[in-house]
Length: 438
Image (cartoon, rainbow, N blue to C red; front, top):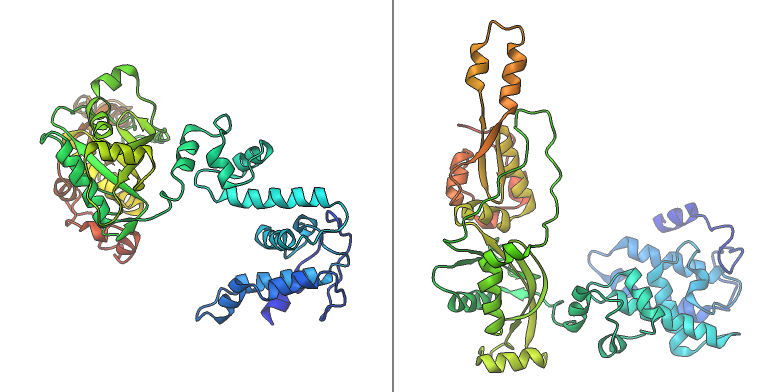
């Protein structure tokens, strides 16, 4: 009943691409497209949804609407694109119709043109499923003659694909698989064994929050010689000025590259030891790429065996990112990189309530300059304005931020286990419990 009511409210465009009018009837009178109607009525995913304990009613309704639309079409449908502009027909339904026509070669009239359109539609669907390739790139690939995954892998489309897209194509079939905790732990052990003991490496992100499966391995690394902490550019917490928008990380300069242990030692060593298979992106303090893992139930083998496996695309390949953080910022960086985003925002809120600032480099206090001079000039009519101006002038200084416990204590909070750092945990807390106590 709901489906009929909703469908009755829909309107058919007055000038669709090929069909100028569509009449809906309670029972079909046009038999031109009965095979397509049967296809949609007997679609396995529709039947599964109807028999599910908690069916997706919107999906079921979409199929019913599409069936009514196809029944009402008064001409044979030669290609799914013919009815794409009609209500009830979306890209998914259109693709199913195209697949049916392609399989049965149910063409009428200009067979060559219709065949080409169907082939393009199939290619578009396949290419859009490739990680990193969107609609625009898929269309460019088709225009260049790429009609299948085999074409994409075997032919050179480097002029169309970015290096990152090309890498994702190369490792397609690997990056889509989730990563298990044991795999992340094995990679961390390999990194620790490869690096000097002075390096401190820990797993962060979904792993540290207790997830059993996740999309990439996130590692935080620090070293005693890496100490530079960028000062905040945010204005005084007493200022009416809004903080500047966070900019995307800039590319590292040659000078920074020479001075940064991440790019001079860590990544090159992991490449040499045949853990790193591909680099997808870098900035001053981070690396993002693809690493090699042995097949399940097999050991890591020798370096030469790993290099050969990477060259031959044997084994498993997974995404990994490395964040290189100053040693004095370990506590704040661990909080930010563990997440989640809702928990991080809550920490920022708490810091702001105390006139402080929290970011990945630490918990910061504002030091107002010349505040004493301004407060002594009470005889001046502008004393309030001068005091406010003095509050605006000053600098940020780093509070104790080496550990998570330091930051929790500064914010007046009890330590929170990483597995509870999520929106559900925060929403379970009342506003009264969120009040800051000094």
